[in-house]
Length: 222
Ligand code: SAM
Image (cartoon, rainbow, N blue to C red; front, side):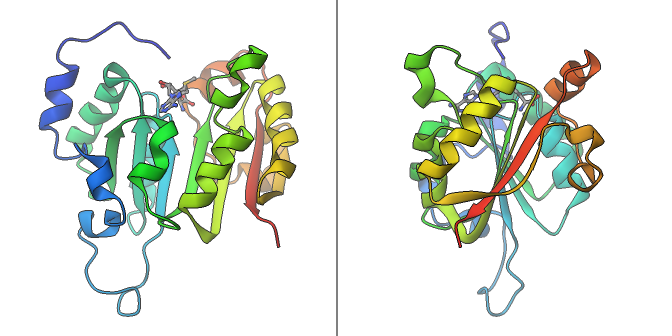
């Protein structure tokens, strides 16, 4: 998603209390940053969920609003896109949602080993040229990064209407420490997997055109 450059983006993001200005400094301290007090023994551990490539943020804003007992971080590389999420969050003021303007390639500099519990990839850019395969967010290279930052029971959820990207993603799983726990090639007609589904902007647009939505959920190999 490329929006025109919006001059106020940098200023709004720099002044938003919901945008973490130095995510590398937050590494290993995300729960503290959310103000979660006490040790894991004393308080119920709050799950930390991360969406990589939020776009305008409809998904993560809705998800965080529905689950006030969990923590959410939205990562997006373009300031002019994250601006939309930050402005919505400014109105909603969800205490359990923080945002990063950053690159998925740097995830292991933002999160420590096992710090996150769930990663959402929604309608990730397809990078159709073979030489760009490593840039695809469900590639084996990215799965290795997710492996570093996910807790032992951590999961990855990926959905897209792009069948070529989805087939690629499925083929990459055996080259990772993960396995497919659930999969569908028609999410909206899969009663079990569609339960509680939150439509993203792209999902609404492309399912509206009749495209089927594919989704998998990965967990670590047993
Ligand atoms: N997830 C949204 C949805 O489903 O409506 C947006 C989908 S859009 C096709 C992909 C988004 O991921 C874009 O906003 C893009 O800027 C962001 N993105 C792509 N590669 C990224 C990366 N390496 N790091 C962070 N964000 C990335």
